[in-house]
Image 1 (cartoon, protein in one colour):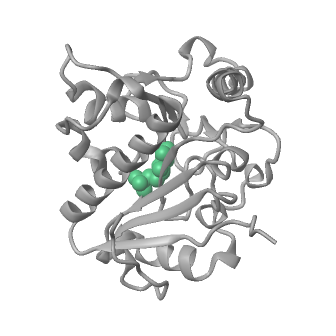
Image 2: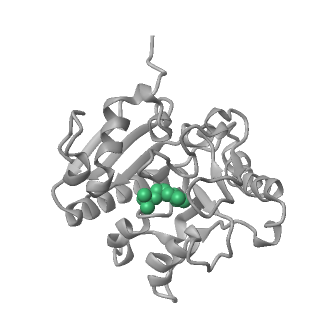
Length: 260
Ligand SMILES: O=C1O[C@H](COP(=O)(O)O)[C@@H](O)[C@H](O)[C@H]1O
């Protein structure tokens, strides 16, 4: 019988951040090529926090087909799109604003600031954008992102899925809101597990000694159920971890040499 359960996460750990950044770019470019060859576009979900800086090698790479990129945010804070807490503002600062203005540009789906007074409507509207991108084009029951890039919070949260929060058991909605995030700002929208766990590829990126205990728990004790441990894309989706040796120092989990 074919295995239809989640695949085993693959852990790549790098001695330096520079090596991580280069390898992550290589990985993303391979995913981009496969996706464009298959469907003519590349659907990507980005996170905020420390993640956007790790994408710096893409900025000057001529291999990136920016005009084929359809970008969503795995989570977003309900603040103006230019606010310093906005994940979009961060990605714009680290990535999109650095692309030559006369070159190809990605299609970036931001949340709608006109709907900030009604969080349910805001999340619904973002979900509708997902439906337009995926259900309409791919006739899919779930959005199947070609690539989701996630971060790991020191408490084990990922996107805006926090430990012990009721959203961890959300099974229906694709995009949900929270107004009680333990990490400021409190109001956010987030992809739920039904979206994350249908992706073709998910890559977590985590660096630094500040993540060492959380990463050990997520990798070695998934039964503890930290939000990041619950990200397990269904077959044939694959989960990868790109971390540095400082973050993985305490984990027993088997590392793989990075090669594509
Ligand atoms: O609040 C958030 O935190 C997570 C993790 O951030 P990091 O700085 O520890 O990498 C991030 O992935 C998420 O997008 C963001 O909204």
